[in-house]
Image (cartoon, rainbow, N blue to C red; front, side, top):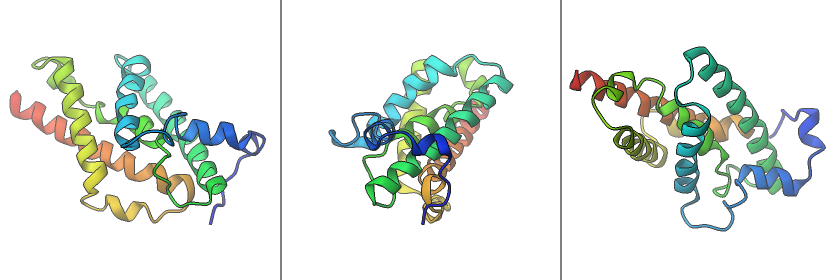
Length: 167
């Protein structure tokens, strides 16, 4: 059941929609979710790192909205629920992992923080503890993206807790 299809997404070809949702590689690689998360590190460092809190959230909300629409449309056109080749959701969720790293940045190398965030996010995304799995029951792009957003929130909380422990 797919209900939200804005006009602008309907005019794009299936090749473009599926290409965007798979980041043009998701159908061709092993471990696509891991690759989507890895690309999310670049997404974060290129477009979010160092942003003012409000700018960060404006860009994040806009990108999460676009991801929900694109991923939902790809699901609709592929005729599969939350297809594994769709990895835009992992990429878009990654910046949220690093929303609260202020305390860590004073004590650890950014490389350690990024690696820790990546590994924690993959853990939460794969294992899907604490209600993450149930979020996949939502239909369309919301169901595809929201579980990754919660995995990113758990990652951010874990990094924040680590930062407090190191204080």
